[in-house]
Amino acid sequence: MQKETKGKSGISFIIRPAQREDLPSLVKVYRSAYQDLPQYAYTNVYEVRDYINWLYRGDPHGLLVAEKDGEIIGFVSVHGDWWDKRFQRRTAEVHELGVLKEYQGQGVGSALFHAALDYARALGCDFASLWVGEENWLARNWYRRLGFQEVGRGWGEWIRMVKKLSAD
Ligand SMILES: CC(C)(COP(=O)(O)OP(=O)(O)OC[C@H]1O[C@@H](n2cnc3c(N)ncnc32)[C@H](O)[C@@H]1OP(=O)(O)O)[C@@H](O)C(=O)NCCC(=O)NCCS
Image 1 (cartoon, rainbow, N blue to C red):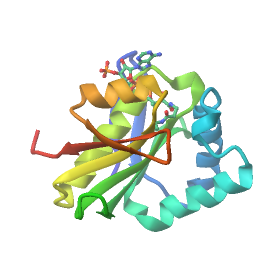
Image 2 (image 1 turned 90 degrees about the horizontal axis):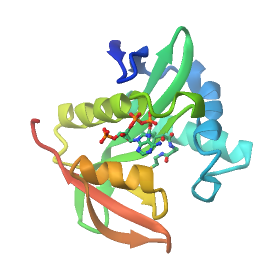
Image 3 (image 1 turned 30 degrees about the horizontal axis):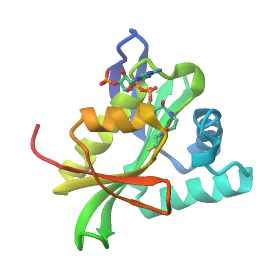
Image 4 (image 1 turned 180 degrees about the vertical axis):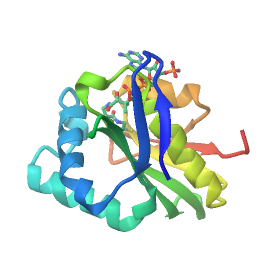
């Protein structure tokens, strides 16, 4: 499955499921995406590699990449069968979303995020959930605009956000 997409700035890219061979590129994307937010990211490259592998293993079909001219410029990871201990219910857990610094602000993250929610809906998930760093205002405000509600916090500086999924 590949989806040809145009970002709001007119940039064209495809969204497709990740392959195992893509994982090293995702390490690069992650490190670039978080360069201004190191407080919310793994900074050690070995930890990043383990984390990306963990994302893939947890739900290979929920790891989607944005590719432009053969280069991976962003990715999202959702685990479609996650147990939310706090609410005692199944949710789609969006664990990660990142876009190469130089491609941010052009609609790539938005396209990936919506593809992840479509995947969750297709699996029959009623909820999508995520954690966001409390001072990651861009993401936090954006998720609010998308209908996510803040329902609590954890580990001091992480905000829990949840959205009820519908057919929209
Ligand atoms: C969050 C992130 C994935 C968004 O990806 P992106 O490709 O830059 O986002 P988009 O261009 O699709 O824009 C998404 C929304 O953010 C807004 N946005 C993007 N850049 C912005 C900026 N510089 N200032 C304010 N808002 C901005 C857009 O307006 C859009 O909101 P809208 O649809 O309501 O208009 C990207 O900024 C990133 O990799 N950040 C670092 C990692 C991170 O924070 N991940 C999320 C962890 S929970």
